[in-house]
Length: 192
Image (cartoon, rainbow, N blue to C red; front, side, top):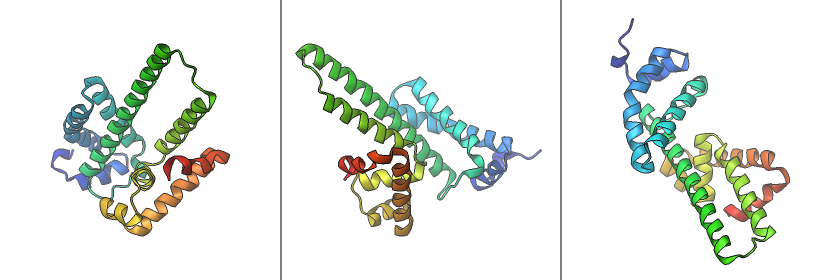
């Protein structure tokens, strides 16, 4: 039996792709602590941080055959936990905003217009579909549409070619067009 703790990240990743459970276990042992600490430092909630790390490793195993790591294993895992942390923070903000809006509603006794409710639902639907994009594609799309970065700026930031960035944005738009159907044109109202 091999001593997996002496294997490089690259070797472990190669073994993981072919379903080697011991390689997966070594990756888990090697990175779970640092990923948990990072998640906890941002979320300030032990259970949420544990859940984020567990979800990351569950997805890593389930998608092991299709995993594409363009940089290093540690960089890939860090990006993945960062995305999960950002999603958790985003969900907290939505919940917090909802509670505040309910308090405002109760305090002012004003009715929420149908238009505002539909706009919020549409925004949530779009955000949900964006969050379902593959991690790298979502990151590129959000940098393009939310941070308003050019393809060149995104390429430099993520160490990708401009053509790859353009393809990722175009593929994201195609996926969203299919998922959102006739509502697709409204994305540009929110993200342009």
